[in-house]
Length: 405
Image 1 (cartoon, rainbow, N blue to C red):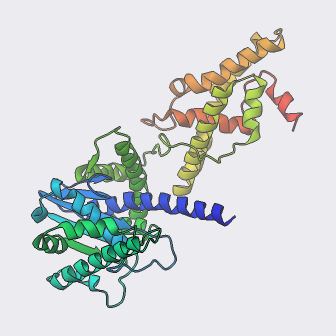
Image 2: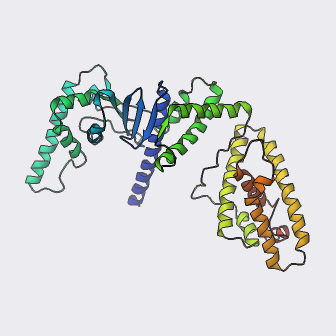
Image 3: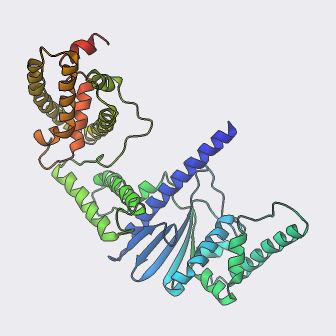
């Protein structure tokens, strides 16, 4: 059980760590004032920003612990970061680069690393201390090896120590002078509030909603960039344009398609009536999978609209009536046409009606609002109505399903 829990916590920490990396990139980009600022994830560093011809590299050390460990000169996070930055040096102009080590924890008390949090410190004493620490690590490993010990100590920081000692003394000092240590940074639970706090030009009442919608858009862009479905960097004007679009939707009362590209949670369990309706007409796995996906999207969208603006509940209800009428006309005609059919014929007609909701209804039925073209809302709303037995696919669906409840 301990191993299982440990694995779960490790996976949780890894997932939250990557999400934190994504959100921190957005926060940093919002902090920039240069119009040419652009950010990339997992390129030269965890986060790399280019602005005004300068490179800003960020290494993030997030933790989900209630009391994150402080960082110090002996920390593996420091030496791993040093190794990453030294490896990147051939691709950088150090004079035009700033390096940022970001941690949600603090600094070890009286540790020489505190110099990195002080922009006015000349860092020479820290450089000497780091040389001493790096040499200590390598000396102790050499001694352990000579004594036949295994495993050797400090495997988690030896590469950084070796790389640092391989630099000329002046390069060591220049590297350290480019580093800023950001301690007590916002955690993954706090960073959304920080992003909201950057939207100071918006009315206070809009900031939380705009921040949430912006983050949802941003998450998609990060995934697309990592999958090479878009450029690897995201520019500040893109973010500004997205903020303007979100604000425009809110000001004009336009409905937003928030779930068009989102996938249902892996553990999502639809109402059993959805699959029973499809089973009545002998629908296949593809029919079921599409119905479940679109039902989740539509249900989530309806809930969000109603939560953000309770007045939309009546609009949702009225549009359900429109959908139901379109279905009713087709279903009534189907019932007449297949009155003398055997069961297989009834199932085929019902399956055709189900697939009409998937393939044709989004274009045949007017949208819930002019200009709203997300097909999932029509497809999924039909499934929501099917769960409530307001619509169905088999000619005799109500008798068959109500009697079986």
